[in-house]
Image (tube, rainbow, N blue to C red):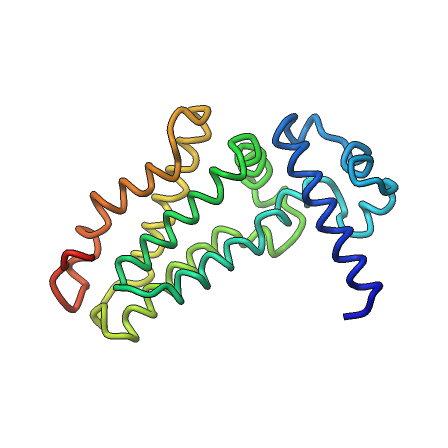
Length: 206
């Protein structure tokens, strides 16, 4: 990577970092591009080198993180149920730590796919479903799950749970911990959902 490319990468990181801090405090609607660029010490025109509009920052902030969470879950040592719980809990943890306000703004700007300009961001729901499918297929391939495990159905159901919990957390104004609610679900119900498809009885660690 050239020095110019490295400098561009660093500028984009600064813009994203500044945008996150301001949006978390004021909300996306009340945040201007000028505020973001001023916080970075760059011109407003620089912003549009990387983003078409300020809404695109919302998607860029989360696009790569969830892929990293999936990769960590796939490489996580331990039984299948631990890997699955790791993914779900860390999915929720990242969203919660990114702040309630940022999550609410993200939901506001993605609930209608027709309003999302970037094709990659329109497919966020599909990518999350595919992430869970990849985890489930890994379990099948490694002999931890039965060959007839309904991967498609389970992946959709688990994403329904995560997105439903996220929406309820948003609507409660963060009255409880999204991460802890997901952890409780995994502890109380995840084993029962997957038990029929495990190739061995749920053990102490699962």
